[in-house]
Image 1 (cartoon, helix red, strand yellow):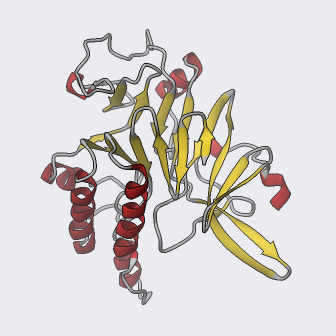
Image 2 (tube, rainbow, N blue to C red):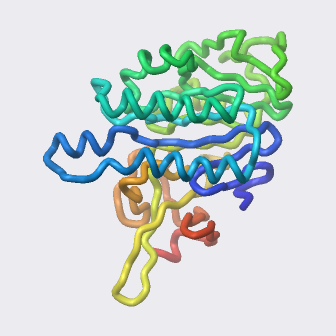
Length: 282
């Protein structure tokens, strides 16, 4: 199902059809081990489930050029657990069979991600801009707007010489992919100066569907506005929990500190179901 033109929902993923880019977010590998350490006895089933669901997604769309993991690939803040080492490396190896490049966007849980990324030579950035001409610009440091030239490629994977993206002159683009846990002045400048769509993770959106006295929580995509720009919120690929009920619970992302009653939502169940407004669930 298309959530906007050229952006398709496939299970818990987003797929940029023109650029052949697959986006997943918030796998939180190592979450079960973290719960076990807290005394919560839960079996470690998530990694197997992630691989099985991704296999179905990739079988459906075929070859992809790039995979972007939009933050929180692992769960622990200040360390790398044994489960995180094993399963994060295995996830990167699995995805590497289906694409030409993997890019990791830093999330709030990714304070110690460097050793894993370096082991598989995967690039870690603050956010990614995909321009309307198909050029992808991974921004290494959103504070300085630093972009490494070797990361700028066209859709056919050829390097392109171009003027850097910076605060003084921002080149027209159409999509900003960022984890969503924070906003600074440079992010706001990119959004303000460009006709741009925004994709975030971080929030783990879900909604409760009621049938009589029974209620069930489902992961969902949200689509609304941040200012005048289209905002898409992607559900987590963490299979241990459904996420945050956006109609009842306090939301964390600064992109969502607003009234959400006009947001559309897309529930992921046996297929994707589209509903017009969140206010209908309130």
